[in-house]
Amino acid sequence: MDIRNNWTKSEIEAIYNMPILDLVYRAATVHRQYNDANEVQVCTLLSVKTGGCPEDCSYCPQAARYNTGVDAERMLPTDEVLTKASIAKQNGATRFCMGAAWRNVKNNKQFDRIIDMVKGINAMDMEVCCTLGMLTQEQAQRLKDAGLYAYNHNLDTSESHYEQIITTRKYEDRLNTLENVRKTGLSVCSGGIIGLGETDTNRVEMLHTLATLPQHPESVPVNALVSVKGTPLEEQKRVSIWEMLRMIGTARIIMPGSQIRLSAGRQEMTVTEQAFCFMAGASSIFAGEKLLTTPNPDVNQDKMMFDLLGLHPRAAFKGGERERFAEAFVDSDTNTAEANS
Image 1 (cartoon, rainbow, N blue to C red):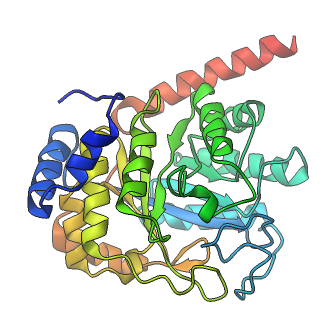
Image 2 (cartoon, rainbow, N blue to C red; image 1 turned 120 degrees about the vertical axis):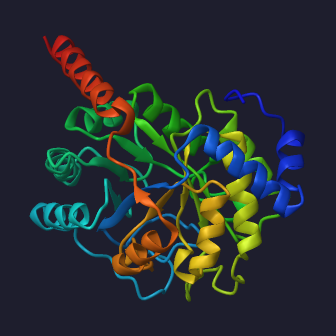
């Protein structure tokens, strides 16, 4: 099976609507063609700047306009972040992602501190990822020059459903940021959330957008809404395992070379349900007690699950990625030096 970027919506819809056991079987087959099915990338996500976000994302407890009990906090000290990254590595994480509740990156002292954090974590030989909101190509390049490996910027939902969830930015803004990230050669991490009141058609549309990008995102997080009291979506019902399987299985089939990440909502899933997701092609998880501000299974629970299912963590920079990254890092240094000379 070749990796395609010309999927049609009707093709994706046909896959998504397959009988669930057929879908899981097909996805599992594709997964084994492209990946070690017993290997799972372990990532840790830390909120380095929590709360006070000016956006109105209907699902988010960090939006300043909602009364969710999440207060605006100062950015964590650099030393504290590096210590948490070191602990995460000791617990088996090979990718460390830092999130800040910003609408967009600003060229200020806080961004300078993010740069220092990226440098420090990169020196630990971990893949460093950030999710900081919208950013320019120049800002993406600066992050890469500091040692950033990947940038996360989720589409959240389909373009046709987007304005029902967020009004403070446009869908095009999301796509522009992904393009800025891709132009620098950074690894792209982009997926979405299900359970936002969207239809199956909306879900197919979002998958179509991801699968028809010029290059598939290297990581595709599939999040199930964790409803938070005080947000407009607080009454949304929990996403079922069958919905998660359809999203994960379809994503695996149409983006076979990507890491499909079982992300938010895992706290509510049993080990059996998670095992089905791994069978259907999930190849990555977030580990640690929190995903920014929402609960997540703790490290010991995940270690027990890995032992039970015979899973093992994916190494950082697997398959020569470290060497390619280092080459790109040197090239970017050279280009920056030439530009400044």
